[in-house]
Length: 454
Image (cartoon, rainbow, N blue to C red; front, top):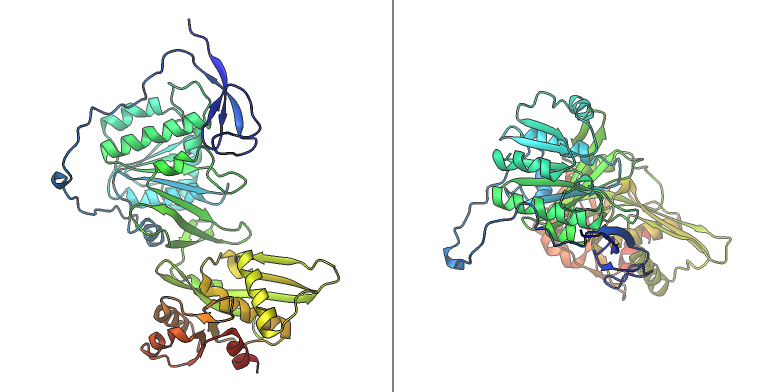
């Protein structure tokens, strides 16, 4: 008779050791080794073993048409690259209560019009799912099947008999395989359960959605290999104090990782926001200093957001630097450029920079808008309300050109912005766009400040 032994597994990379260590030798993370029981008997085969494979010539591999399953939610389909590819595995992650299950159930309700859809929940009962479906108006979906189960072994005959078109598992941390002795949510269970579902998706050509929990650091809970197994990783982001939610892809084998989907949380579910710029600027104050609108590109979509800056005298020896929605290192660089090239002094001033609406700006095209907002607040001089700016700022104070200038201009013009401050490198692109407003093309930060502040 075999006897189980105690091992310690790393919750980050799955490394196993017989004794506890403060630092994992595999990934060098601290305090991640957790105690687990491991059977000392012979290794048991994985569930759902595929038949023996044989290699084929690359030339003989048939070319499949890019058939995608559209959900009817344009924001959702855009992030996926045009829709769900059959046989792919999608991981949807986000903070607790952000709306992952709600958004997924909405998408499944629309895809149920194309074929059979199975929603497996390990966290909610069937009655709870029905209450959410009624609130979303999906209780009469004919092809939407639901199942409250945490065992994949129970799920296997259902999927192998008449496999659905789409399968959703909420969440992967609650699933378990009976072949493993560890508890649901452990490293081995999450890894093997995800591998089992991935193998099933490829063999049966089923589109699979997995809902994943996140840790307090904001990353997907469980082993890092989970994100490598799936074909796409989507994050649902947003501040609970705001109604807007951003769906962003950080990995996508069948599309771009630069696209985002914008939703608004309401009692009836997550509603699509086809024109997020108008909503993000709806409560923008007028005639105040430190406020500048920037046109940022999120994938192929231009979005206008408000950058706010506040420069105030500090009574502390160490002034505060608080930046929200922008890269802190990038703003520190811009502050140094303003001090060196334009003679501003921020040593005795607190500096706050915020992007309204909970949006996070990642591209360097927002540099010029941040600089203008800082100068406007420091001089306490408001900028024109119809002004929009973009451009990358270098260490020498130069303003470099950015891509998609024509699309940025078209979005700004459609919302009534007539004054554009942009790099001189984008002047030719804007001249071909027949801009009917005032275009200020600058080569340096000093030139931009002189044009706007005299």
